[in-house]
Length: 66
Image 1 (tube, one colour):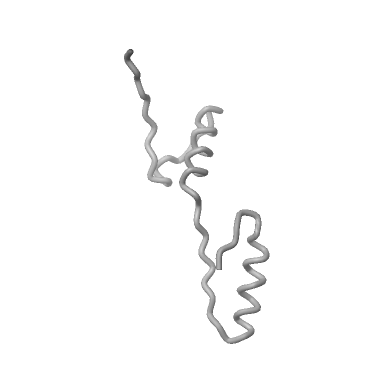
Image 2 (tube, one colour):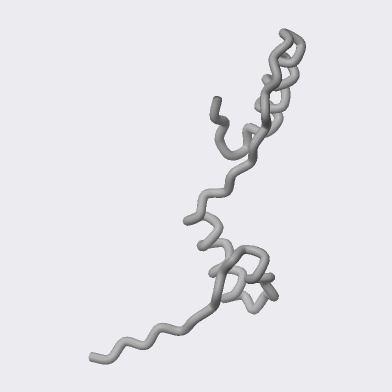
């Protein structure tokens, strides 16, 4: 099953119900890469210190010559 952003409580409740039925659900959290990139970019633009190594990200400057 997939649950969207903001549905963490519903996912936990569903997993609990499945355990009651004798099943063994796994709760896995995944982050959309585009959303993560946007968050990192936003925080860097605000001058915040972002632990880029933790996310496997690098900061670079792009130069366009016309």
